Length: 510
Image (cartoon, rainbow, N blue to C red):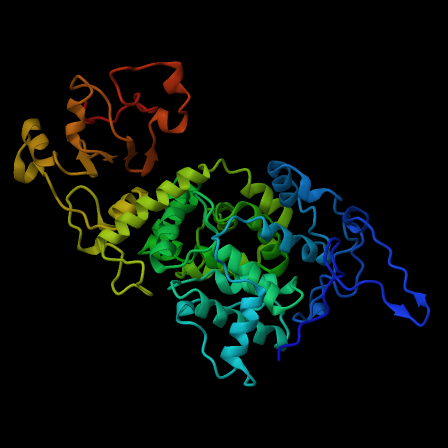
């Protein structure tokens, strides 16, 4: 028999027993509206469940008052309040808000709830303890943070995760689930409520949005998507990682761990405040902000050691020495990120590329190395290290595959017609050009070279136009990529995209 902690006062509108009569004098019941009691968060039990060592997590002083009608605010304003930390000063405020926010999450019709958890827990554990039960296989290789849970809380966390494995058999990889369960357990009155909250996040069916990756395929696609976002929004940090690591994707595969369990509790729970309203997109924002701050912290000297992954993890753990949680969130939401739908489409493209490499939904862990071994790359124009940097600029879904040489002037001559013949039918392609003066330039083309024929002429620009120059390798995007409004300001009916912002390097194709 599981004994939950003391619960909050009965919510208005809940059915309960009628007035009790002691002798001949009835007990008077005073009914108040929810708004009248919303600001009262001084309860000794609400927000201080039995699963946490609260002495190590003191209540912020003084607790900020929460608006009485906070849940009636428009979604945009509610997000603003969460970002600003409206309920960050009160554990009791979170205990009131979290269940109500999660009940607003759109999820599948048949979703396991608190009573189901009670039945399954009784069947799985009975009178025996939880220590004899292993954690689910979908947590293999995943950290399980506890965030100051006491022994009872650690046991409850394990029971909840085991029941998730029993009731969601389709989950094959869930690295975010332990941290979510541990954080929610802080503000749940019992195990069943925590399980129900976690269950709704797992079963969310909101369009173009997800809270929890539930397979290795989905998780790896998220890692690749983060790599694409880092490439675009954190070019300096991305270049630093590309120069310090043999495998950039391997570094970005741990981006979620920078947040959970990387961030201290006070930071992690502020991320959770916004995550419950905005979903996975906010995790990308926070991780990108951490990446930017890490680049600033290492300075021109670069990383101190050879293990860039360990340095990033240590930086996240010591983030309080660099920036406050409010400044971290302010920087994160200052990034002009793609829309939720655009990020979802990018994730779908990355999933497709992974499936082409043999990754499946039911696969638990990778059975092969996804990185391309650039040490086997041979070129008279760039070195293997330089090619690794170029490869890190390419969208993740393309960089999964090793480069294939299509054309070389040393082997195929200098005929432009032969160049087109050799390259048409392949996409994407990387063009490397070395001038007679030894200067190197190049471009990445995401579409087929035959696209040049579809614009009505042979001189139009096409493709994404990302390019780099040496000796100081840099990447330049087309003006249209950085400022799409120019496409409306200056119509170009027979050209797919305008000229690049910088002058064309010598030898560039026209």
